[in-house]
Length: 171
Image (cartoon, rainbow, N blue to C red; front, side):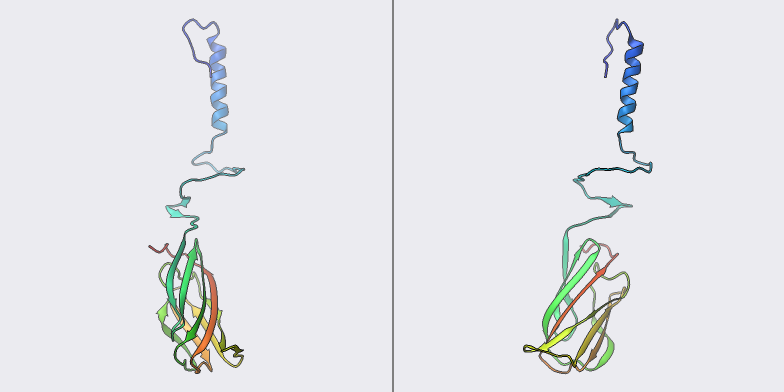
């Protein structure tokens, strides 16, 4: 960029060069409002947001999670992905049923639509193929349990689930 001084012999050419340099600088800038394709790696040091909501969040959130009858563990959230994996002893017998249990998916972890998970069960080292335990996790946080022949106690229940959430991040 030319700095003008009193008495420059050809200030017109220098002025045009300055405008050309400014135009090149503007052309290489990212616009705040126009549609653009931007290539290359961009390293954002702050939080990326759209309409005030975080787009990506790599923080791991967790909360206690219960599936009733002593089957308890932890539920996790990274970004919009929610998952849990529980291996626990059922502390009392479940009746054959299809019913809502009193426990709920915690706020901040609820699925966008019904998600399901089926448990494996063992007594000691013996896999129990004659038993069934499944869960439906609803968008409102309610949990529906479906169980058959789960009257034994203790019985080890192993279950995992994965879904997407649109809930606000837990505080």
